[in-house]
Figure 1 (cartoon, one colour):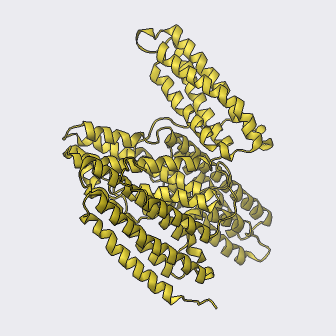
Figure 2 (tube, helix red, strand yellow):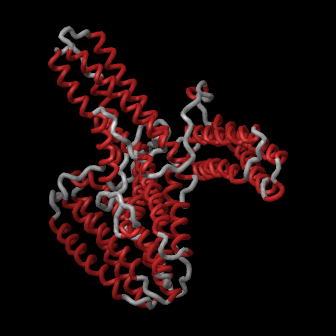
Figure 3 (tube, helix red, strand yellow):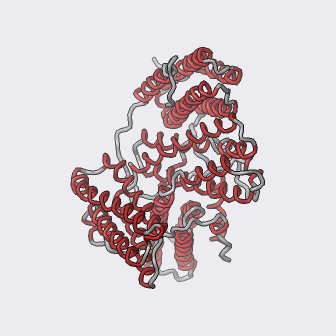
Length: 603
């Protein structure tokens, strides 16, 4: 007979959590001597292995009651493993340089302590706190279902009650859409805002008809259909905005952080304004990464992949209060400790960001993404053609912007081929070879023909011809992914994305004069500010100084997704918790034996 409350396991868990928390804080007293580090690390792994084993026993004994917390627990355990990997790399670097990297160790201690505390709370939490990352789908489905129930068949009073409930649900959908608009490219932000206004206008028309003393049932039905149509139209606009955000973000995935690193390592004191700008760009970049990542999570029903994506996002979030301060510390004092501490944290951030990008590539729909990339590249080629028609020469940097965009598709296709159908893989294979060859030809030609004295009108035309060929090959790849539905519409024109990185101020949506729309815009800002993936962070406040940003934790959005439009809704059988616990234990064993006497490489 299974006990409903396995008190013995709970007591063991409480004891294990307490002992492990005490032990992890002794890290700051451990020297960088290899034997001391190895003994301490194996002791930590022993504590964690015991806790993980007890968690497995707890779930077996409370399978039904504890089931809702499984993904949350797996996320925290995955974060523990990620933190251990950072700790190992820190130990290896410490031995190489002969210094204890105190700030890096503190970062690991904080992360593991937070995860252990959160696991303990989750196990004792009844009812379990639900995962809100997929709420937008639920709100959208609920809104479409609820608005369809507005009818006069059950009387006008009932219809008005249903309308009031529907309006509240629409508000939630629109608020989440506006949270996306906060970090979207400027043109897409305007499109989303305009689409939200259209939804509200249609909803208002429905209310006017319901309030009419002589309500016309046919008109009510017409306005209900219009509300559903406008809501789906908004969904498509938001979806397109996220795709364009993917292209913009992935085309410069690590560049904003590397700019801060180069500035702090090579710069001098007294240049705070430039640093402020770099930090602001990086904050916006991370916000976008978070939006895209959580969008992808909620588009996939592959729970294991979702946990991995959320873990990568949580790793980026955990470094928010550590990474930039560690880099600015180098600007203030270029000591070996500061330099190496900044390098190890930056390397960890980049590793997690690259891993996240690979996971997201496995979820993005190749047809939709190829279309966005093609249209972006076509716009750049149009600009190049226009420049030459004016009897001007194009510059190498103009072609570089085209190469940056098209290389995103190259990276996407190489990393996501495992998700292609056999038909797609066969069609893409030969065309991808041509694409890679033409891409290399354009890059080489731009370097040789547009550099220095070689740049003249004739060479500019020669490079443009190659750019147009690249565009043709790119379109062939896009068409490879077209199915019967998309084939008829593959030449449709959609809104052109904006290439320039907008400033923070340009993304602040101004009041509209419509009280309800203004309320929704403010709700969207609140959603963007207050949500985080795993580690709670305070609300972001606007500041104009790098010094203030140094000590500030920037919260990231907890975003939402739209249904089956540009991300693949992957279906898979969710692996049992027992198997996932076993995988984590195996990984723990691997980590615990990874610090060998001759270890010199990072993991």
